[in-house]
Figure 1 (cartoon, rainbow, N blue to C red):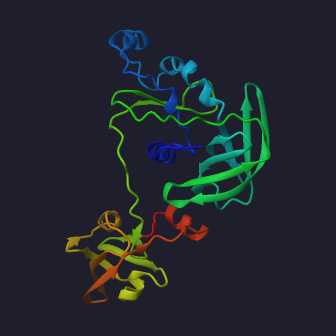
Figure 2 (tube, helix red, strand yellow; figure 1 turned 180 degrees about the horizontal axis):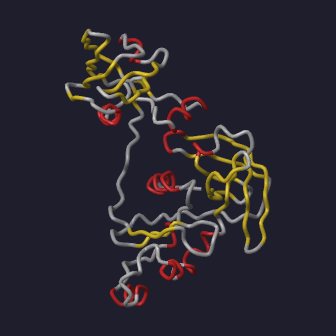
Figure 3 (cartoon, rainbow, N blue to C red; figure 1 turned 90 degrees about the horizontal axis):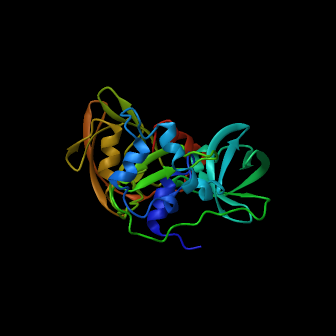
Length: 282
């Protein structure tokens, strides 16, 4: 199945708490007459209003057949999207990758079926996981090949119910979002006077440059870093192999080193847990 890059990016953003309803959007912007008939004259009607969501039932019905509920260790974890009729499902990786057991609930009208799922693999950068269940004749989602997405078009977030989970409008046209995938090889901790190194990855650019646990990063390429987001932003626009100048404080001494960025390593259970606690690899 051919999936355009922009669909993959959107799906990576939405899957786990929704399913992509790209192919259900109207082909044109709603006209003034259409909008008036949906909203009526009640100014309190918003995108969250039940009556507005109900107007999308017919549009999302085909997509809803491809949406499933995912449970991890007997707890609700995420939604998933069926991508092949023989039981292949994508879902949110960070919600299932450390689970000891994963189950998928298929909902068809009033009927529900719970099946054990196997975790096949994960894509950490997009937080996607591939699951496999023992099932056949499922309804896979059909990705829309049409790249003519217009600002102002409706977007529906589809769950397992009749109505959308949420509604929105396209505010920005299609853009290619590159994944730079470069890191120094450190995890960070926010402190009162800056950003402290909490961990250093073995054989990373940071370790080779001499950065140690406990060092406080104060600048990258001459730009002050007062928060962990500052470090991640300055590094995030670069590529593996690029060099950055890092200023840091160790004890009472100031140091400056050149760090060669490396490719972000695959996420393990440990690194995924650190990401969820705010210690993302930088």
